[in-house]
Image 1 (cartoon, rainbow, N blue to C red):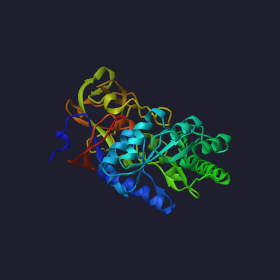
Image 2: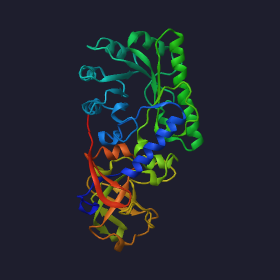
Image 3: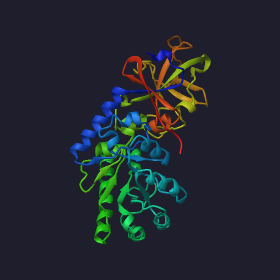
Amino acid sequence: MATLHDLETPALLLDRSVLDRNLSRMQARMDRLAVRLRPHVKTTKSIDVLRRVSGGTQGSITVSTLKEAEYFLEYGVTNILYAVGIAPGKLAHAAGLMRRGAELTLILDSIEAAHAVRQAAVTFPVLIELDVDGHRSGVSPESPLLLEIAAALGSSLRGVMTHAGESYNCASTAAIVDMAEQERAGAVRAAERLRAAGFNSPVVSVGSTPTATFAADLSGVTEVRAGVYMFHDLVMAGIGVCEIDDIALSVLVSVIGHQADRGWIITDGGWMALSRDRGTAKQRIDQGFGLVRDLDCRALSEDLIVMSANQEHGVIARRDGHSPDFSRYPVGSLLRILPNHACATAAQHTRYQVIEETDPTVVACWQRTNGW
């Protein structure tokens, strides 16, 4: 079998043991709260990862692209929620998936989109997207528009969904707990308004990794969607959702040079390998373009981060500005970079090199899908 030393860098590493612990922890939490988990596969985009999730290919999933839906459908996954507001130009693609056996649910937040869906060649089940935190898309749970969209959808309406994306900006666990309740209460309130007006609303779908992790009560909710929890990342660690050691994903890079007068270690892991995501920049600890670990993913005493990144070059430096001990990082040595945003970093790669904690053996290579 190959080892980490045999891989050509940069390479995307996935620690299977850490992944499995993350999966078990979230499933146990959903079981305690008595709600179904509809995992979001936008982070992993891999059938091999989904097979390790409770329910696996027999369960229901959330996707962020129709290409993801197509990919997972090829492996027999049929119950799919496409959790991005439908664009009319994608309805033909979506209809094709339905004809091939997908139970594809769409979301929308406008009367215009509702009319387009009703005129499509097939009948789609639809959830109305709600805005419970001012973060992005959706209809306010109290808006008259909610009932107007429901009327336009008619029998296609299946319920409501929301995503408390603002939870990523919470500064404390207490704030995430409050956001989780705000998310739950808003979604339940919208469903109650629809039912009171005579509309069908059996589905109340909520979810984000932070709110799923810290929700105290999910009464009235029928399903939770979360995805980043599978891998975790530095943003999640920065808001207290996970520990650094819960991050299952890293990028293996090689040292290719030094700029001693500047205190820089140069690697072959630039933003094409790490992504440009700087999600920790506004957090208490700015991790640059990624946190540097040794080959066994252990913390380094010098506290190195990727301070800047060009397309194929990563510049590593000490966080405190002092010069590192370059003898510890000779040309050709290997380092691992923990990502700010697991979704963005994984999207730069086509496969996972699967490992088990500190064992350098590569035990599997799992493919992933990319694009739209």
